[in-house]
Length: 62
Image (cartoon, rainbow, N blue to C red; front, side):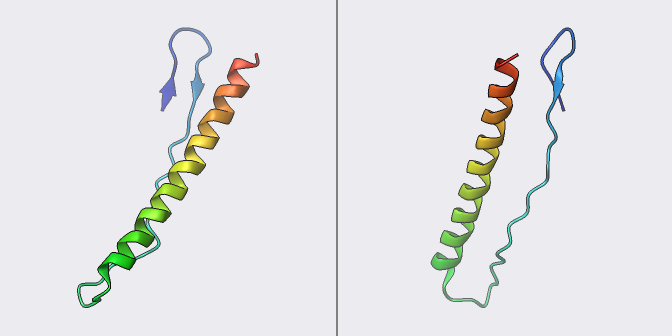
């Protein structure tokens, strides 16, 4: 994905993410599984935010 306009612009790679937890219909403990899925998603989001902030800091330092 191309970001920015004009001159040299920068690129940000998009990495497809996939949940590592699967919820099966026969499992009775949905709440625990959904909490785990939510935590995994929040962790991935936090990692991505940190990566993007690092990129912003690097670009801003130039």
